[in-house]
Length: 80
Image (cartoon, rainbow, N blue to C red; front, side, top):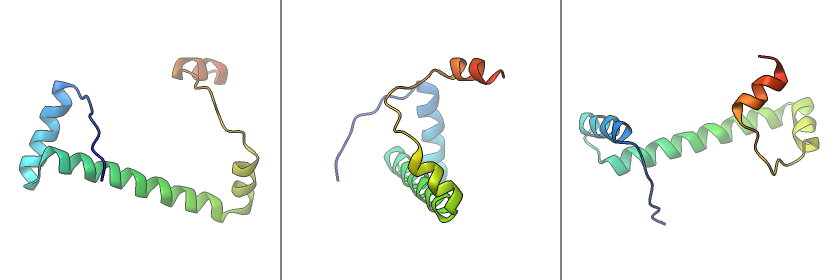
């Protein structure tokens, strides 16, 4: 297992500390659980999308994005 440093706000650390204390875990264990759950959720979503032939084709045809668009620009382009 690899260790990585992360930076979180004082407010987020406080929230994590409360969660950890309530569940008898460490803050690191809470973060690991959150990352694992997010990863499993993403895998399930991808599995679901790939199970539909139409969505599978759309995903396979889509280009890999090498640049990110800021949220506000996307909203403006979509007119929302």
